[in-house]
Length: 93
Image (cartoon, rainbow, N blue to C red; front, side, top):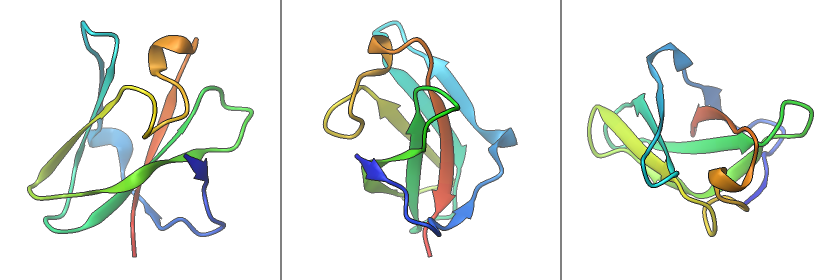
């Protein structure tokens, strides 16, 4: 994971996003997408720190993307190891 660039891309409307805590304690993030486009998932453990990018970017193969946050290597820590987790999705240029 690394810090978001100054202009990370276009934020996606998060009203259609589902964030689900799975029985495995991983977090499923689902969002509507454009086919064959790349998205960056940004996250933060609290709202007072800068957003970090989960790497690599996600490539959409359909109308919906389901991404699971389970910690390294995509994110620095697993969501179960934090008290909260916030997400934002960016459509890459």
